[in-house]
Image 1 (cartoon, rainbow, N blue to C red):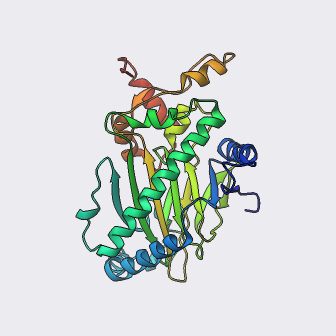
Image 2 (tube, rainbow, N blue to C red):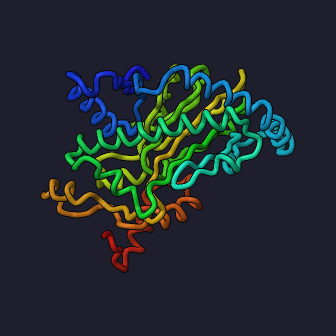
Length: 316
């Protein structure tokens, strides 16, 4: 855990830019995850988001969750459960169209706050994509442009609570998976750990720290970078005690009709390889496949998309 990359963006536009970019490059190439401090989102805003998210869970979701645990008789399980996640969630879509006003039980203050928080995260995600472009030697704005499709990116937030679990050794909060999309920004509980990533065959804790944003890379960035950056398997371990864990994950993903393929500039640089390892596909087609295979290895997903590459896809 002591080696987990924690990166400050405080002086990104100043004298430390090259050193910060180098840290981000190393994190993308060797971890697929990093944790940001001094990212420009105020601690006050984050504290209020956390308070209202936990209040909303207690008021609107906790009882339903307890009933689910009782109905599945989870207190008494003896063998590992592989077909469910012990999480209570709701999903807010921000782009291309927001559905925040359609989600029941959200108070006006919470709705307004989530909109404000989403705007800050969207801006941060786009800033990070440009830093990745700089590191990769791609023109500024390349990743944002690829993600854009015809209607702009898909951007949404999954709000999760992981209540105390009666059998954390047998039930995961969230089973191991890689994220399908682009770049993921996570605001996680700083008091309750649980998020782990797989590195060199070992599960490593992502340290819970106050007012940080954890960043991880999804499958689409692995494809676009032709494997230079990898999406990394991660999971959430359930805890037995306390109030449970809060997680607010915002996914900045390609638009549904965006065409995803390895960046030609990166293929040119790898002249000795001269081969495109990853497929070319429409993001929506990948998501349909992912929905059925989320908790399985990503490589067969890439192979399946390659098999569909019979007809050329227009990229103009």
